[in-house]
Length: 197
Length: 205
Image 1 (cartoon, each protein chain N blue to C red):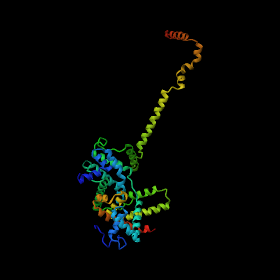
Image 2: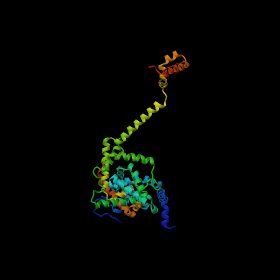
Image 3: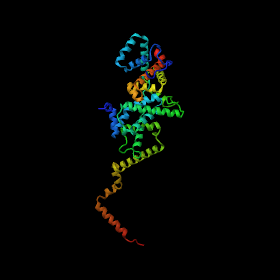
Image 4: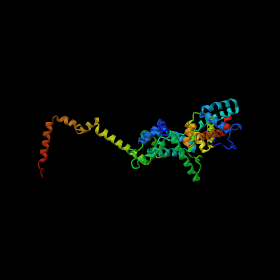
């Protein structure tokens, strides 16, 4: 027998009549590790010895309590960190070239977002806020220009024709374009004449 | 067929060994799959060994880095799970030794304000659907069980964790920890006795 505990070991079964081998066999029996030939012996002893049965029950209950231990999962940054380390190892100059490890990019991106949030790198700096407002102003100006210059409005035509509209009554009295031309030539002739001293 | 060839062909049936052989051929997607398959399992066991999530993740990351670094020399001489936990065990032992040399706080003791307490709080918060009294009871039980686990020596603790959470046989635990099967049997029987003794008060209620 190897690794037998010393007799003074307080962790030994309290049944002084239980040899260490029997104790080990009981545990191996519970673990399903006992050879078939020895299973019958252990079962026989259990049937005859209530103290052994209580011990076995206590081992079993203590074992089941281990289920209460926390089952930790990898944090979301773990995969990103591991992949980043491998990228540096495989290709220190260009991580994205062939030979570098890659993981589902969407997953990595979401992990990076989480990572940024947790490290505070994701908090919006003043420069980003300024850039955001600048972008908003440029967009607004572009929108104004597009709607103002490119989309015709109903008033545009009126404004364009305003000089005519303004003198519409006079033009109506004149009656024809021919008369206006004659009138213009007449006025021009008068102005070309040298004024008398 | 020699016994060595026979055992290698036996391990070839292990799907994770198949993945590792693809990694050896340069298949990075296979490596990604292995990381995905084992990261939670490794971190969970390492966390219960070192009681610090950050330290557990650092160790797990180092395990994966070592595997990747040595991928070209990989030979399927064991089940993948025993191989990867063997590497993890070696790294955890080295870390403990280094910590001991620097006379720092023991790895098994959580640092004040470290991730451990946060992790417990987070886990408890996840159970927010439970009644407060029941939560307190659970927390108490969890602390009792954690203390019982801490009462084990490091080899007993690892053997218990591999058997309980990785469902490893005595033979696989022996292969992982470099022990004979009978030594594992002895180790686990004493570990069980310590656990029973530590939890005895709770078991009576």
